[in-house]
Amino acid sequence: MKKFLFIRHSLAMEKYEFRGHDFDRPLIEKGKIRAKEFFKAVKNIYPVINFIITSKATRAKETAEILKEFYPNAEFRSGKLE
Image (tube, rainbow, N blue to C red; front, side):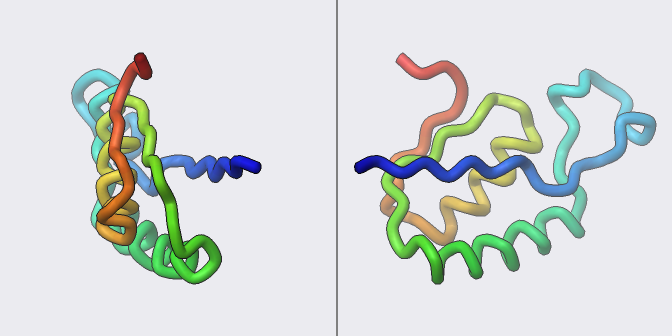
């Protein structure tokens, strides 16, 4: 049986604070810290993750890259699946 874990991006800059396309909004420092704390707990529940798949949105990729720190052996894919 396959299991899927869906995680939304961490805290990003507010739309009104960011000058640029919404797709390019980055995580804020507090979001990076929260993601690390959260993924540390996730690692205790899910010791192995095989795949990390994310959209190409900056905040999603940054969150997924933090997750990858906890699962260095997971295959990482960003964007369209083929």
